[in-house]
Structure formats: C-alpha cells, structure tokens
Image: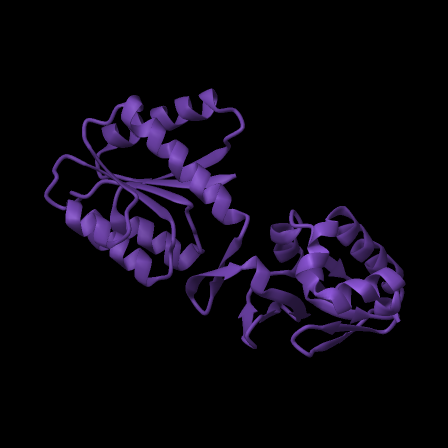
Length: 263
C-alpha cells in the first residue's frame, strides 16, 4: 500500500487528478494506494507534524493561497521527509526551486494521463525498490530513513522500542513491538524472539540455549523456550540462501556447518 498525497487549492483540480489516479489504479491492479486530498499546504504540513502522516508520493500545485508549494516542500525536507514530489503547475517560473527541493518531476497544467502515468510508473517503482532497503520511521519528531542492513536488533522497553544500529547508535521509537514487526516481517532476516526482541539474523555471531551474541558485541539473553525455534529459523534462512556464506566469512560459515556456532 502506497500513500499518495495531492495538494491543490482548486477543488476542480483535486477532482481531476483523483480521477486520473483512480484510472491508473484500475489499469494497474497490482498497484494499491490510498489518496489523501489537501486544499492548502498548511493542512498538509499540519497532518505530517501532528498525525505522523508520511506520504510516499506527493502531487502538489505551486501557486496556492497562503504558501507556495515549493516553500511547503522545503519544510517537508527540513522535517526529514524523503517522499517523491511531483509538481503540477501552470508556470515554469519555479522550476529551479522545485529541483532544489529534490522534486522528481515538474509537469505543466493542464495535466493529461499520457504525461502523468509514465511519471507515476517511475515514482512507484523507485518507492518499491527503496522499501526493500529502508524503513521510514518517526524518531524524535522527525522522519528518518533507517537502512534495514543497519538494524541489528530491537528491544521492547515498555511503550517504546529501542533499535540498536550498526555503528553503535541506539534510537527510541514510539511504536508497539507488534507494529514494528509488521513492518519488517516481510524480510526473512528479521525474526521475533519472545515478546522482547526483534533480531536481524545476519548480525548474529553465535547462539546457544541462553544467549545470542551479536556482531556489535551485545549479548541478548533468550526467553525460555525460544532457542529451538530461533535455531530452526536460522537454519531455514541460511539454508535458502547458501550464497550468503560468502558474505559471512569462512570462520562463521564453517562453524555453522559443524554446528559449533550453536553451542
């Protein structure tokens, strides 16, 4: 599911683009997205700030009452948003400003399907590729991209999750463990260990019935009864992708094969 925001102070334009997006979705059944309409840049920014709304793609007019679209885009970038931005406007006057805020496209009105649809193709393809590598999370009131490879493990701490990242950084996330696991469960390397941990299997150095040794030096104590299932998950993960041994280093790969890794 993608989140698409459309911001324009003209109702007729909002209706027109929404109909185009609906047509696009019908033509590409595998592409599912939710459309949110905004009639001012301030409404959009307020929802991002207060309701933690993080669109994947933003279609935005430039000439709007109250605040230019390029000004709103700059504020979004300052808030940490990496969403794709497509400007839809009646003038070329602000093209340079648009690309200074990393807009991916600048389309002149009137907008036609033949112009918009190829841009949507490219935007959604880029978003899908990026989703395979990053999570977008709200941390300390800003939106931040976290590389999946950098996530070593996550530990539940009451109503917060403490994410340990490669390089030694730890960040606190106001989100339930269940919600965070939903976000990473599509990636085979992430497994849930009891109710306390989400662990990246690629960062485990050794494992026994009591302790997981992580490659950053941390030792995580296993909840009772979790070892056997975790070991099976580890075997399954590396059994499916034997080529990963080349990335693990000979010592780790050899220990995995002779099971010393699990003692």
